Image (tube, rainbow, N blue to C red):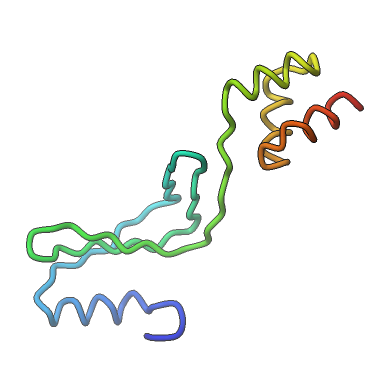
Amino acid sequence: MFGGKPDPKKVEQIMKKLNMKVQQIEAEEVVIRTKDKDIIISRPEIMLADMMGREVYQVSGEVSERILVNEDDVRMVMDKTGKDRDTVVKKLEELDNDLAKAIMELKEK
């Protein structure tokens, strides 16, 4: 159980021994939205445990991140390049919101 990915069945057995109600939740994707990015967990394994009246979720899976773009930045790049919103958003996401590089690359096209 230590030193790698926990076996959900073993975790569930241990929690039951500690009188914790445990259940698995089926999901396709989990998204954690922060101020400046989304954390996406694909193919998640989710366990829900009731610990002394409190619900605790354990989530594991394939993790990726998506940087969120600022609308003011999108408008500014659109104004500077004449490109449409979708093109600008894709470029800003691709370049991790590097405005100067996005403007230069979009002006080249």
